[in-house]
Length: 300
Image 1 (cartoon, rainbow, N blue to C red):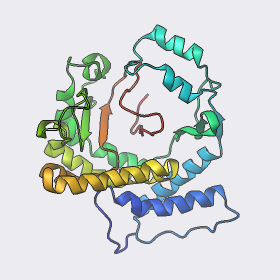
Image 2: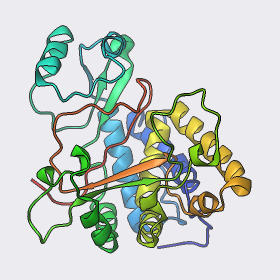
Image 3: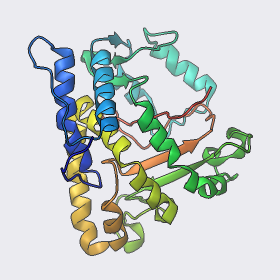
Image 4: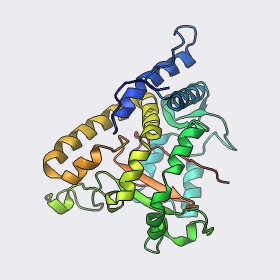
């Protein structure tokens, strides 16, 4: 079923889905005070099913708060700026200094709470519908050569030691970045063209452009869920995208072209296929931001 409504083909699509999802989550969490919503005729059936599945999982997680017992601010302050997470002894020391209440295996939707009952993590198993997962996995084969070529000895992130050896499976790691910047530069360096944000080499490839257009709807549904999980981050990210659009229109035609179909309000998508990563800590983040980790396909 489809209507005649016009949908965006970039990150703005999430706004068109978010309003329905927010109302659906409100109904799921407060059924006695909000009316059941009719199916929006402008949505494809599979999109409608996926929106409802995501909304139901978000609501179930919200009704299942689990205190972590970790004082996240103190934990963050105790970590050095370059804490990699590679050192097992150091990680054991950190864990003993900040022991969590939680233990064992969690297999149901839940929110993990930090101090002050702030939501530190949303755990949403089975939130993505099978049709949306199939769409994401089905769009990957054109990237097979890029994924294979990404495996090298240059970094542990791309080391062949951590990727699956089955040659029938896709394996590799790509960094699709709309506004990649050179890490490690001192903040006082005067910006030159070489230091300005730019489209990453992986994203510049035609196959990558094809992929981001093929996964518009699944990623828009994920971003619509972010509008519920972290509204301030969602709104701030939209503002950043608008600023990038304005800047790139006169400074970077390639970025402006990518923005026409960039499907998310994050500036970076890491695609990792069939990798077992070692223990590590990602450094380029902030304690009050959410990253989004999505697992799709069949795996053990």
